[in-house]
Image (cartoon, rainbow, N blue to C red; front, side, top):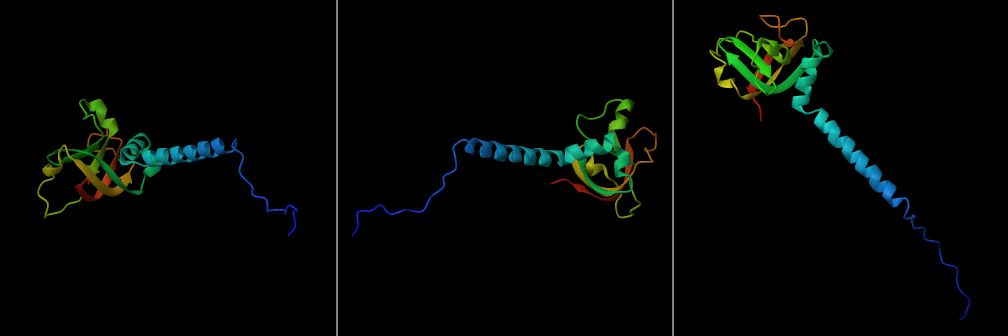
Length: 143
């Protein structure tokens, strides 16, 4: 045996200065993902449709919001509930198709509902003050 030192393979270890950068990058990516999920939530989608109905004209959407039902009047709103006629601008009128098996939509009043239908940005409800209309294809209680 020889007393000579043998050359071992080099093991690279990342510098400690890059470690905080990786943590920061991961934190930023998680933050962006959280903001994206929040931006795609049902309440922000409702708010975006109310602010810019033309962007959704003739598009099929699923909207989750509170229902305001009185007789044949059916509108969607995001809390707080509307109090004045000026609040119609932040509501979406629900255009209901005739269905002889449904006699009343009162069971949805003041409840969180999911309405799937096509947005019509050119129509603004019977009084003309709503943000837009959604031609309802399906209405059910939100989960």
